[in-house]
Image (cartoon, rainbow, N blue to C red; front, top):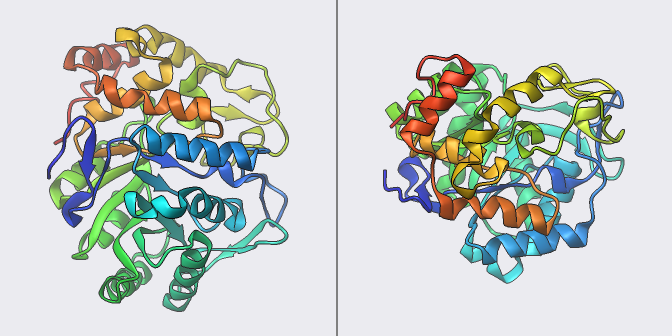
Length: 339
């Protein structure tokens, strides 16, 4: 697998991307589950989102990750609009598996059938205003492995038809990820990874199967930006204001979990070494963790895009710095480089 400090190759696909990608969940705006649970990150300014995407392009970011359900289609539409004629310069990843009402901005179920996969792909191509998806990802983390194997085969059909270039599964379960890894054109696993939440088994699978590790929540849903304080409630339309069970680090109505904030504070001096911001240090830890990693922090403003992209030039943390982090967190070399 070819890699430099500034680029990555998506596993065995040969697709080259910037070492940093941008995650487009937050720019989808507000949307909810059928029972009223907020699933977005609050209100957004679409024009600022477009400016942020284009600024990221100017700063060398070439990988953008979205999903059909983010903003119930809005994130895909916005990304397609922002890329415009520069579509050929970037690698676009999106996801499928969720059902939603685009007008009501409500997610209302899941569908793991091959028939839905094709319908969803057709709809994503239209919203993104493109003729192909570079990385198509299953967005049902706990899908039945046997049904997922059938979807892997459907993805191979999509590759043969020229509709996608490669595929992946967004899941934190190594056994499930291994099902997709058996496919010739599987290129990655998308999973949670940040300095507070390591994923050694998934990184090992990526190394063994020649896959890229696409990292969601690289900034721990914003905790590693330094902008959250204990007791400060988040706006009602933000998923972190009423966090579901799978979202640690936040508490209902009171914002960031004080225990998590204490861990962030303990790491601050290491992560902000060498002139980095806290967020840039968190991204640098991920790059030090494995040469296969591609963190995809979210963004909503030009300033956030500039700060995140600024991490690329500073590169990964040193072995000594990652060892310091392991010591502070009390884990045994959990952050050692996984090649």
